[in-house]
Length: 186
Image (tube, rainbow, N blue to C red):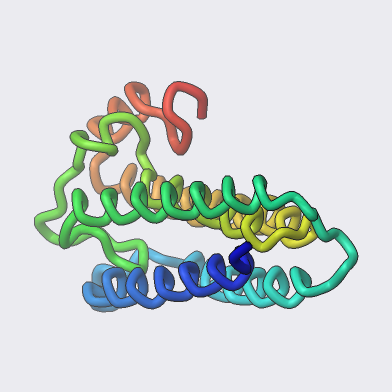
């Protein structure tokens, strides 16, 4: 039986490394930056949560002893990575690590963005839940399920405010047609 926790940790950090390169290649200047604090909150919360989850997963307290759930977690991790990567590619140069509106910014309403306004965050959250499951510890999973959505909701709030300020009625209409994070639900 393979060590599913080790596989999850390896896949997770490979993804974080590649995702970081893809996302931080397009950091915008201060003049365009509308990110008040969400990038810092997201980065700190992410790192602290990841390290807590990994460290806790080696403890007996909360151990799942359910390899089928760990396999499900690896599948969700892969699905989340695929969703996030697709969203980043579809948004192209408008996807930046900080909340920013470029001078020629366009509102994307096709691909994944036809169904949800924040598909890259949806992908990240699915991947994090998968990671929590794949670690094989209920406490690690609980930490991911509590902390990550809270930080991403804060981030989405800042991003929605910036997009509303930039696009006005067209963004309001887009919000009426799409869900924020989960297709047809929320």
